[in-house]
Image 1 (spheres, one colour):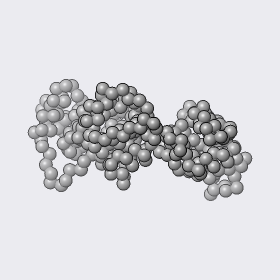
Image 2 (cartoon, rainbow, N blue to C red):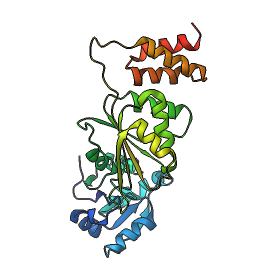
Image 3 (cartoon, one colour):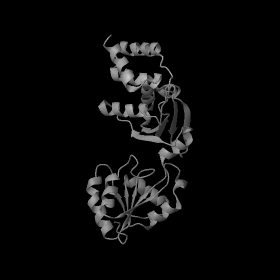
Image 4 (cartoon, rainbow, N blue to C red):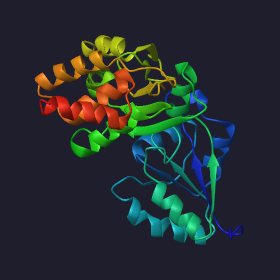
Length: 285
């Protein structure tokens, strides 16, 4: 049950680039609250000053979020209205704040969104890919088992996938997708959305991998990937072509897992069928 007579925690969306995207409601909310909790106090402090706001700004980031919970709850209990902002876009979407929001809601306080800019939604809207359902995966892990799981999710999803990537690793991500059989899929790279040097580049994974492999990439990057194509009932898999591709990968020392992923992505094999073929090829059967 909500405690309507006590403080409210507002989740305020801030511009991802263009300052004109800060809504009147967001501006009025930031002006009215007692304290603004921010992922980066310097960044958010500059934003507030550009709009003539002088507010106390407290840090709330991945390293101190748990420690801030008690403070936020106490302030709400004292009747203070608070705002939570991220560096850019909508709070808690691949950003700190989830645990604070959960704690405030569990304690019975009202948590209210102030919607606005989102790199995820902006990228989807210009992608030209089906967006009635989509999977958001955040940033790709750099290595190890976590990256393997992330790649499985990205390449096996039947729906459009949205991901963030560091500019210096964009080419490697696209190249890995191509090597795993997703080269023919539609893909859109959105860079510096709403900023002066905004770039939205459409193409296939293979074409974009080729383009960005020799390109120095700067700024914030959002990637939209077409979902795994569905094979129509009765449509046959080209077993000879699939086996040839599998043997080629095995000869280069690729793992059974990576071979199976390519067979799924490029040839439309089911997971079990792809793994069985990959295993036979690797074991030399």
